[in-house]
Length: 612
Image (cartoon, rainbow, N blue to C red; front, side):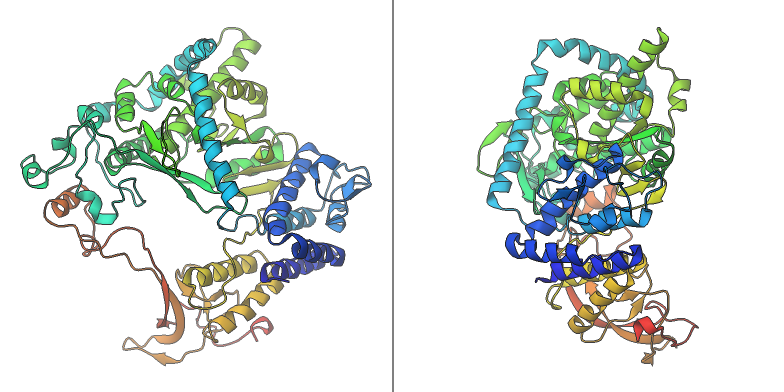
């Protein structure tokens, strides 16, 4: 049996002990199916079974259609049956007071391996590209369907009030060019990295019409004679790429040209600052409010959590135009910074009919604002049907604070509006992900926080394959992070198994650390056991450990590029003109660290039996 399956079995035994259940038959089932099906059982089949379990929590009843691929008897699957029978009765109906520990155990065992970053098969990659193209064609058809004109007018009417109020300040700033461009950390279509991005040689004509190159790409027009910035009708297309996500599907990212990304970042910064200052109904930087509202909804059941499938790929150009019709200067800037075409992995170039894909800096804020506007349209429909004449007002929007929340494609709204929200989203061509949307029972999920009746049932997830040696720095750090998450979640025996593994990998250099000590290869513990090995010139106790180092690549900005970066992105880092960009390599080295950073304290060297 492989290491992932062994880890799952250790965790199943520990969860069985916590819940008073003997999971030996479940362990036998997993061992047999992993031998026959490989890791796909742990990383695809089990997570799918877990999604069915979540739906059963929402419906309040387990049905056979939720356990495809598993034998069912008496209304419940035999697999994990000991846990399930503490949650559901013999007819599959959920108990009035189900065992929370068993709910947490089932979700933990099912979701444990579902998010491991992995390369997909070629067939799954082709399916992902096909899905992207299919969604884009659906956007084209939706925009050219004359029956949608009345819906667009309705959406525009709501947005002229709501978005006009929300983005009035941002509209004024953009109209006065009171924005600061910047470069993002990611890859771009023209393959410029780090400080290279400040030496732009390409500025598309449509971008120049709204943002003249001499005002935005160079410190002074006289530099153009020396560096030769190309302003022409030629186009550098955005490039679609596939990034490892899970074994079942890759993440589809579209890399934007550097010049467009440069101005998109300026617009995004204005949106985020303006919106988060005015309302809590749309979020970009903090997910904690979503989790609080999801927990509240799991208690009162009057808040629903919705998740959309292919969210960014379903917002059409005309839908975005209707939403931003009340802020024309913003819409003009968005069109100027938008990619009109995209190159697929097979070399084909196709026009883009959606507003933007994941990878554009303005994709996230534009989709959030659009989803929020659609929710307000549903709210207006509900009240007009219930109360007759109704108009959105500022005071009414204030009443929705704490009741409506949009964070990307994670949406929280009152249960009363659910039917209208579903109707509006369906008319707009958007797909609600029923496997991750919850409205009926006591289960709610949003932004990585999972709750049942107010209890946190969020699982710990494996993010990468378990490390086997120090030549895999990221794998070592990921395995240590997994161990620490399991320990803090209360799964000490499973964490102990990973401790044994990591002691072999690190050859014993595996100290106790604090949670805040980033990069140190060590274990978190409620009991300190640091041992002093020497002291430094400041009389601090030191101990040797391994540390993950990810150096910023050498990437110099010179002459005009250095001056431009210093003016628009001042940094306290003295080497920012010499090194920039995302680290491309990581390595682990041994280092002496202060014992206070590695878990030591005045508690001395007392060691609990767990660490002996």
